Length: 124
Image (cartoon, rainbow, N blue to C red; front, top):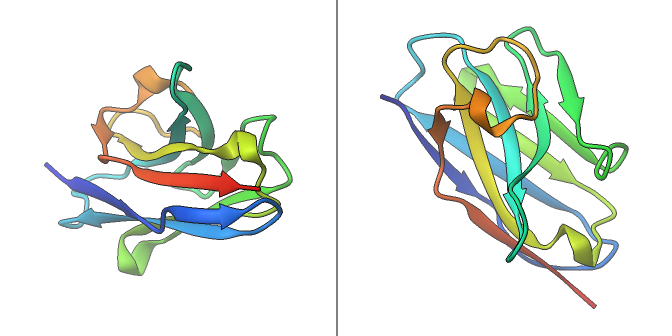
């Protein structure tokens, strides 16, 4: 089964931007809906953004207008562009994929493939 590997995490100042990437290897054998989730210490895992195979997207209210999810099918890579970052955006960010959902949903149970996460810390 495909592995998902996130990258691009790190420390960023409040108001700044950062780009997260999720590489799928090997190339998926089926069409996946994909999503980004995040989890801060002591809090539930939160769906951030999702994208279906047809490009339709969905966003959590907390990030709508600031974050953009996209994908590059040729590179088998999912992206999350994060702008206007705030301290409350600090979390471990996880890439996820679904083998049975073809709709942009922000529900943990819809995803059966998960990356190991990349930490994003927003300072000052």
